[in-house]
Length: 544
Image (cartoon, rainbow, N blue to C red; front, side):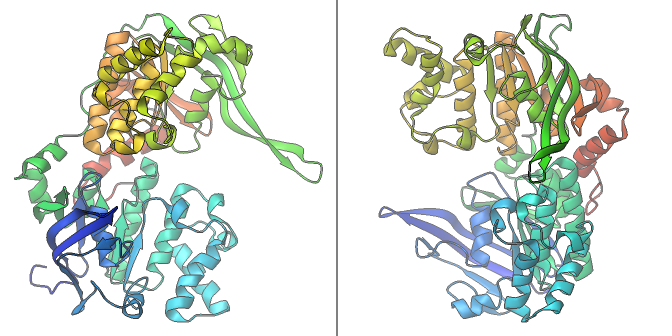
């Protein structure tokens, strides 16, 4: 492979962004190449410059705010940097294509799947009428969309996350490109769907003989997919080489830190007979399906169906399952944030029949940390105001000075400098924003915390830090956690007990050791295989 002429050569490339008269260098003189038929991975944490580098290949950056102070991107002897729009149109979507991280924001919500895939064929192949439909059906079948003929008229919101990503891949492959750029193509997907998408990319790559540029921070995926790896941090490539060499003999300190950053350790192992904090019996959350002119109820979506659960002080119950399994709905029902049937008790008190006003005094003891810290923090409020808001509602702290002292202590407890509390969320990194969200919950001295995918939007090294922080806060305050996640590595590091959900029901429950070492249900075994075999299978093989 080393003697093969590169398909794409990136030479001495820099990327700068200009804002308010100030220029910031995002990528600093990087060089790499991609050979025909190989998979190259650009690896690094958020802000490392990997996505900016990939977008530069197709010249998709927001010019003129973005510029290239140096460098060339050579494709078939032509420099794409500064190429004219007509020249770029012959390459984009035709010879080089791209699949983005979040398909829901990449697909047009107003157009059907047939129209969106067909548009690519019309622009680049000039197809019309029945020829378009036939090719769209062929592509949807190729990427594994079940019964594709029934999906032609569907809109993006009518498809699952995995199906939307398959449609994106179908669009990218419509013109049989030479290079597919996949920018975090599985980050937003469940672990089983993630494995399916990676296997699909591998199969299509072999079948079509195309090259693949994989942009990701997930080192497990890189090890099983890539032939060569380029590690980026702060806009520079700090390490490069064959995948197995980089993983087994990393030379740069940053690469070594990345490889060592997977969440480690185990749950604290608090006594199993500790005080019951949150418990529910025969909990049900059924959403009615209405149809007809009179909108009669013709059925129900059983989001949570006859689930019982006990969460004790100092212990963590992990709730795992794919999207739509009912994990988050269960947590919201326990917190009385959605309507449900069944008995719910908090610290021995029945709360399922309480009205909103009666629940308010208890709310300070039942807190929640959401998946996306940027989305859960108001951009218009300072950090101090965000954390203080709950204190004001719960009438904690008689004066602004007292409340500010409580905010400072909460921020200090989660590892943030209290001096930064007058800044706004956009001035912090993703990991820091999640620490702010945790501080908002901790300031109220809760007994029970629902953690809804609190690490899934974070880089792996930051995930490990947040897991360590949550474990320390639990030890210090004897907290009861309900930890919801599809990332089984993180679940293993934090949970004492686990319940596995599918279709609203609990298919298996037990201690973390029982579930991970001796799973009983086929569904649990499939989840574990997708999560862990992906990281242990031979290079180039993706477990399903």
